[in-house]
Image (tube, rainbow, N blue to C red; front, side, top):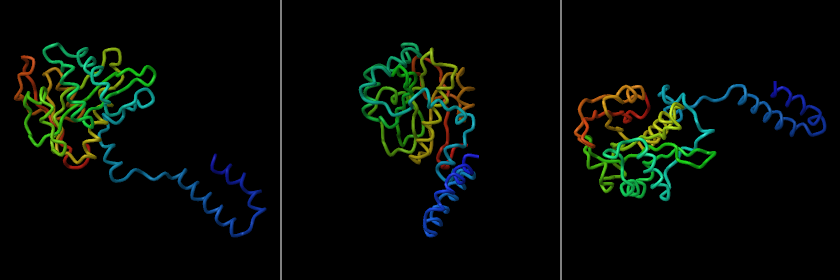
Length: 231
C-alpha cells in the first residue's frame, strides 16, 4: 500500500541520522499510517450533520457552490423564483432584495461553478412565532435573527437543473445550518402535490396552513431540529 511504500522509502534516510531523530520520524510515520488506515469517525456536531440519509446522500459540491446570497445577486434570485412559480406566488424583486439584505444568513444559493449562474435558491426568515402567516412573504422586517423558528419562504431550482438532486442538496445544507444555529423548528408551506416531496426530506405535514397566498390552499409542514440533530 501507499503507507508501506512511504515507510520503506524512508528507511535509507533513517540510517543516516541519529537514533533520537529516528524515533521522532518513525513515530510520525506510524501516526500518519494509523490515521490513514483507521480514520477517526465524525463525532459531535459533524455526526449530527449526517443523520438525514435521504438528503445527505446527494453531494453536488463539484458542480455547484452552495453559499449565502450576496446582495448583488438578489435580482437574479428573484428571476429564479419567477421561473418556477406563477406570478401570483413568486416573490417580487423588491421583496427578494429586502430578504437578502435583512437575512442573508438565511438565504442560500446554488451557483453553477462553470457558468456562475444561480441554479437554485432557498430562503427564509427567523422568528419566535410558531405558526406561518402570509406576512412573512411580504415583510422582511418580521425577521428576528435569534428567533427559534425559521419560516422557509422559497425553494426554487431552474428547470434546466432539475432531476439532479439540487433541491435536496440545498435543503440539507440549510437544515445543517439551522442545527448549528440551534433552532427549534423549520417550517414551510406547500401545495398538496408537494407534500410527498417534503415528507421524503423529513418534514411533517401539519394539515391546512394559515395561508391564502396566491389564492391557493396550502399545507403547513415542519422539521423539528430542536433536538440538536437531524432525524
